[in-house]
Image (tube, rainbow, N blue to C red):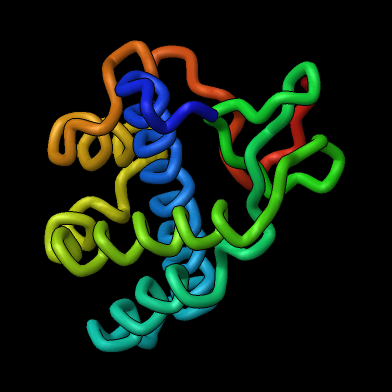
Length: 147
């Protein structure tokens, strides 16, 4: 993708935001699964969410369309993806920025439905996504899809 194009750069940030939140929400769901009587401690939530930036983004790549990378991240091995260190560095960097600068806001909204979470954090708070980006989003980053 052409990082020099402001619209492409914005869409990459938007989708990196969605991938990061998807993985953070998945980490929270795993943490709370089966713990009906035992309350999850705040430090456990922070550790699980922080772990996403370090360990949960390595399988992602940019989806290819006509052999050219798009602005959409996926970890679905059935989808042709461009992968490489720069993609992982980009996602890790964006994830670290989201976490370091906005962790309280993210934690306050992490229990929302995915669509609402993306709108609250990526569109309204960070202003990385437009309403159109969220109106007809690509499949969730971890979902199986057909392209």
